[in-house]
Image 1 (cartoon, one colour):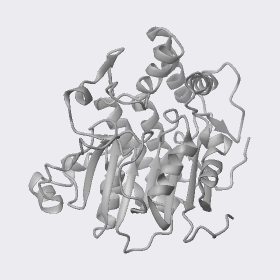
Image 2 (tube, helix red, strand yellow):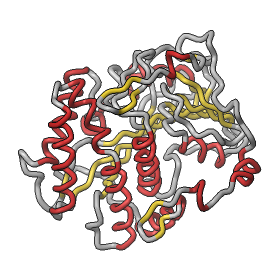
Image 3 (cartoon, helix red, strand yellow):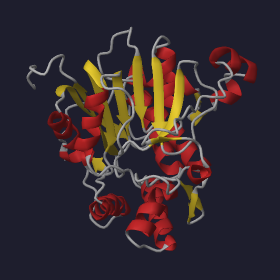
Length: 367
């Protein structure tokens, strides 16, 4: 199946983007170890101990109370507090955080070393990052737009502590009513929430309300299905079963994992009132199978991101949603790793990016 508008990214972009986090000999080097000493970080970011600024008076943002910090332990892994209505399926512990760092690097390379695809002006005033995770994207965006106020929100306080002075984080459930003033933001960035949102139309409608006229919403979501242009993924194989797990889990919870495959992003944006200005579908190679050495490097990073904590991605949806045993879940993870290691599958996953613009006036027509 090859219904993709976008080819793999230009290889020159990939090598340059890999240097962002110090890819040396195929290994990801921690920036905090090799690039910055503590004083250098303080000089660059400031000692922003209050980076997580929260409002206990709002309906969806919350102060760091004991209930929020009381993570749940499931199958030996830490998950977000049950304080929230949103049900995120990924762990919030160190193995998952490290895997997210790999993913962030891989997707930055995939997008041609660009943090966003929306045509933003240099003088934007405010930006919002929904589902900020580790905060890496928000940190980079705040550095790129130093005159803008940047807010990153998430349901778990796993963000980095040292951040630019124009960035702060809030604990927030994006599926509840937002609490800012109407027409407040120039840019809203939403990434990797598949499997956690029941009503994408409602989520995008909130973004529409709080964006200024002319402001942009950008949605990034990956597919959970492996594909290959060289040979089909055989039914019954570990990779095929992995994709089926996420489809079934989404059907059972009502939080779909297939929004990058079925057009949900574009349709929900249009239903909310946005004008679609850009829709791009990228191929993310998984593994070092590309002949081009720079594409090969990207594939290796993506594979490492995927394998780093595959058990973490699978444990919740299999044991808590589909009622598998923990042993069966870990067995599937093992078989997936083995198949990727032993077979030249030439596989990739789809990454869908949709950019919508709030009309300058209510009379602007959709395109």
